[in-house]
Amino acid sequence: MSRKQRKQHRRGHEGAELRDTPAPYRVWGEEPDPQAVAQMENAVRLPVAVKGALMPDAHKGYGLPIGGVLATDDAVIPYAVGMDIACRMKLTVIDWPPATLQARYDELTEAIVQETAFGTGAGFRQRRQHAVMDADWSVSPVTAAYKDRAWYQLGSSGSGNHFVEFGELTLDRPDLSLAPGRYTALLSHSGSRHVGLQVATHYSDVARDRHPDLPRPLQDLAWLDMRSHAGQEYWHAMQLMGRYAAANHELIHRHLLSHLGAEAIAEVENHHNFAWQEEHDGRPVVIHRKGATPAGNEAVGVIPGSMATPGYVVRGLGNPDSLESAAHGAGRCMSRTEAKRRFSWRDVDDLLAQRGVTLLSAGLDEIPHAYKDIDRVMAAQSDLVRIIARFDPRLVKMAPGKGSHRRR
Image: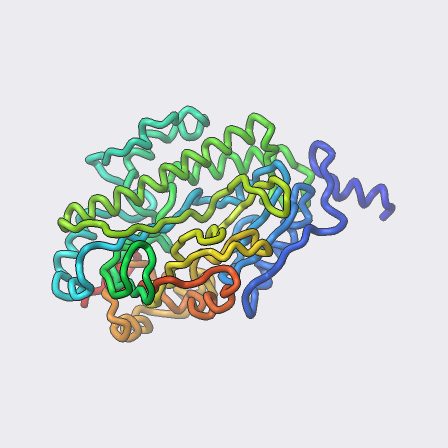
């Protein structure tokens, strides 16, 4: 193939070419998923790529791997944000002692059952109220078309790895305006529900249409120019989905605490699956954190484990090599299909009992065996975050799967 033919082979729409020299990136973790590494290597070949990072929880996703961080020049990549836009964590420390988790078990269980809704089509017939529904939903034809569905699902949680759980928070040193000690805490993981999926799907299709000549492995990394109408439309829709996802968590926590008559004494929350306009290495860039947590200097976030393993509240160290990012969780070590093929609930019962966890519902594909060791993940990113507190789950609810209902 001649040099001219090679250039034509690499050429994308609007004259864009893949980089001859990939943008630099760094990998964290002892044994990185080779499929995730391959996806990152594709991402840093994009003409808009500036720098990348792969977190220790990384595994294969669509386009950019989950656990992938990518800086781009004046471009946003819908699939590098993710399908569940603005998926996020929220932890609320409440004014109940840890003994509450045993003494008021029935009350906590009733609150979760009554005040949460899980699953792909889940929502509330009696709609919950939040100022986000007064925002301008006409920023995109997609958000305008799905506003009613979004309101129905406001305050609900998705399927898969989304959860609501009560547990015990251990704080060894003063932080979060709290004294050292043990506390009862509420932790949730959810995102922007069906409307976020529709925004991601629509603008991913638009981006692919604008770059029809991208090689097959890179088609899910098609981008939108931030100066274009479509790029601005997606950006504003993404921002709205960020507010909507935050509202979901706010309502979950508000309704649970109201049901229990409890008060919040500290809160922590953070996005993943989002893009930010930031400055790195002295230049403005768009930072995509797909399944990655912002970890700027002293930024507070939550990095969960699994239903039977601890999660951690952290402060970022602002490491420039990771684009000030860290892992967003333990990360899967096997596919959902593989987890369901290899394991049964009998494999989980003893572990849950040993850890003092009551599981109200979940899918078999979410068992702890399907995830990496959270403590190894945390050790692999000691230069990205420092741990300030540990959260141990005690009462867990996720979207139900066949045969998933567990009782203590």
